[in-house]
Image 1: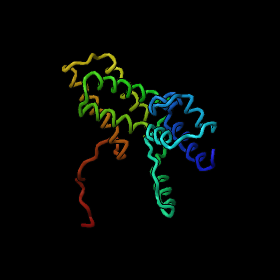
Image 2: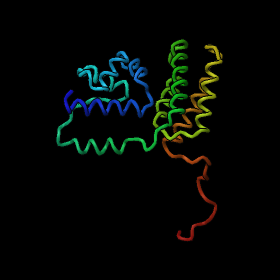
Image 3: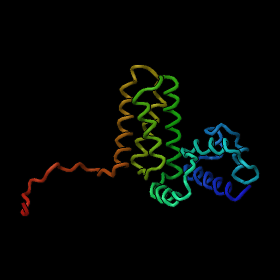
Image 4: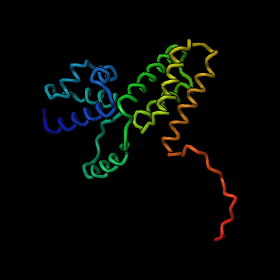
Length: 192
């Protein structure tokens, strides 16, 4: 394997490990066999461009060509964009379980705005510093989905779960405080 390919393969392996995916899970998402992923990561198989693209996209990454003079700027931007802390592995396992249940619901009930919001929130949770209390809410919601048969009568439950998960997502994304604050203070400002 060439040195350049080694760097790309290492970056993809690091991304797989950081996302908490096993080689088997990545193989299912990328449409490749687990042994193929293993051989690529170990350097015993030179991956073709199409395989690299498939693996990258399964990891929510994109391979792009950029002018060489822009590489330092792109590197700087991607370093800044990395989450400071990702969800721990026990949280990722629970998020994966919830995502499987939501996808199963979508396959039975069809797509809806609420289901799309739930999937969006779950994707965000993978890279967020999720708290145990928030993980409990996600876990309880997944348990409710598992127990609830798919029917039109359950639309309020699905909308409620989507709302709860998006509230957590928005709080984590925007750093909103747990406690609401008043829009203004009753105290007068002496500087006015």
